Amino acid sequence: MVPHMVKLFLIVTVALFGMQAAVADQCQQTACVNVYTENNQIIIEAHKGATTIKKNIAQAPKKPVVQSTPKPKSVPLFFPPAAARETVFKKPAIKRTYKPRINKVVASANLSDRLTKLLPTAGVAYQPEFEPLVHVPVYFWCDLPALFQSRVDIIGEVVDVALRPSFVWSFGDGAIYATTENGSAYPSGTVHHIYTNPGTYQVSLLTTWNGTYTHNAAARAVTGTVQKVSIALITIVKAPTTFKG
Image: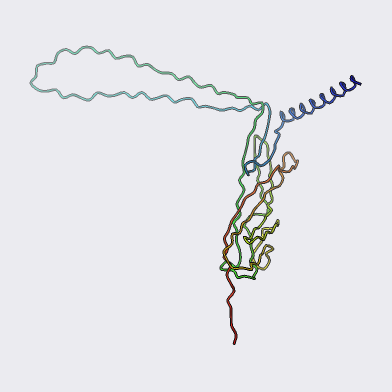
């Protein structure tokens, strides 16, 4: 019984080692790409083993030698001849040479390039624009696109990201409405709300982005979501009262 368990353990260990080796070998030939969210941002990460990075550093320029020219001296008249001048020997100029810097080659066993794509923030609009009335529907909408697409070139690999938004409206009086539509103005808008009491309300829109990414013709889900909040203030007034005699 014991030898059988040992044999089974060895088979499982070899299989796991073979799977890890296959994944590592795959990342040696082509980049392994993963798209996820971090700090409420979209992160595209690529790993590629045995990748060489070259950084060229230009040679330092030589400093020009500036020679100063002596100013001419005026010779006074009616003076005895000047004494013999001593011979001045100039020191030989030292010519400096700059050794060219060697371009270093850095090899990385696991190259990781991170790229962050920022998503747009929604602008909230409503109708009627000026002092909507109680017991009258107010239509809300936002200006976000129904689809956010981005193509990224990372370490020689092309990654296509496609994200779609979903919305949760909070109208400030306790009512909440969830939808996948942006909404629009009257009369075709699907996001509308009726206030029963006058006052100033804070309307908040929570936008949640999620979607897929495509790499080497394979589509995968983006891990996690990105959320953004937009806020607008709306003032609701009473309807005018008319008395008929």
